[in-house]
Length: 125
Image 1 (cartoon, rainbow, N blue to C red):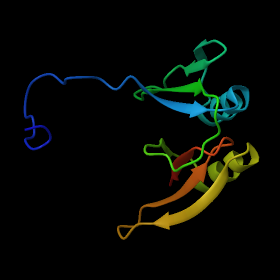
Image 2 (spheres, one colour):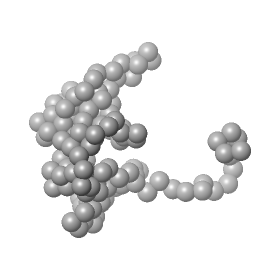
Image 3 (cartoon, rainbow, N blue to C red):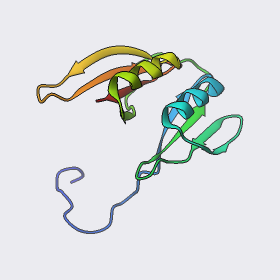
Image 4 (cartoon, rainbow, N blue to C red):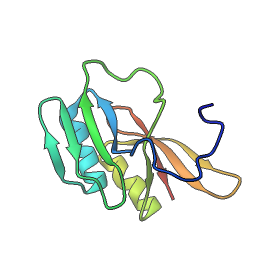
């Protein structure tokens, strides 16, 4: 039943409001993502930071958790960079690290990267 038939008409069951990343160091992660996205903070407290979404995009939120990241993310943000080389370099200056460079058979190119807390994301040309 679920997932087998494509819905051709009608309303979606849900809208994607945003993506939340669990982080250990909320202030460090807030500074990193705020610079990367050039986003204003819409709401924050001692355990949450919610950024205003970019036009046409879902919002990014950060949630403080007590433990460090230990395993690979099951989901991750994909970021389309305005300038690939300088964007990757600038994110590294902000504390991200490049894990692996990938080029797909159809020529799409990206870096699998990790933010300062170790959460994976893709930086796409």
